[in-house]
Image (tube, rainbow, N blue to C red; front, side):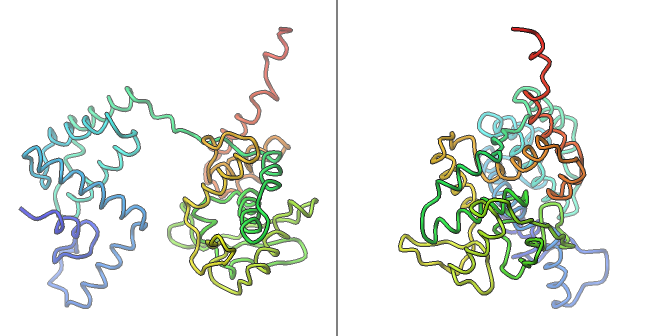
Length: 333
């Protein structure tokens, strides 16, 4: 039986002698290394990290129960996810099934996750626990104004204002925000053009441009606040949004997605909002909802958010219209 480390290497294409290769004569070492690297690049780093953690958890569980993790029997996987249901969300359980499936595919084995026992167990977990995601509240335009006004003075405040206003105006995901470099920002007479090199829905790095127009109020104008932040921080290249120490010194390293959530929560609390309900996604959701309330078309919202399907955009529109177009108003209560 392969060790846990060997199996993880097979899945991720690193740290092992065996990787899933086409049925061709043995490749020379340099070519095999190149294949390994491209196999690894076929999945996002966050996905690889998740698979690694999930597979280790399944291996540890299997060892404790006396089961072999590879090949795994369907009954063992069903028991594993049933136990996971007591402590994990449905999405996390599904990701662990995906990791188990990848491990088997990487070694040329048929995935036992397709077995009826496993599929029906997962179906029962979904019906019991529900699959509705815990959505964060949308930060609407009025909320954003209040949050920006509550920001600190100095470099930290300048960065936080720029982060929130750009995230809101561009409807960016937090990963897109922290992935921006100064070189991705082009200022012009109409506003700011942001080039997204890669995003969640663009893993191949085709890229797209997002226009950020000048705001009517200088204090909440995303273009001006970005310019002010770049000048104040004396950034000439590299990461746009960076960490800052308590003395106001700007570091070289870029912020993480968790840092975006912390900034939003901090400013939401100062604005009198419940910080538990707000996070990085609140900026993106707030843009779509606020734009829909103001009468923006689905197409224009999708152009800004980069959504490929109208279904999610329409959800934001419905959420924004819950009280604007509500038949209960006509009941005379």
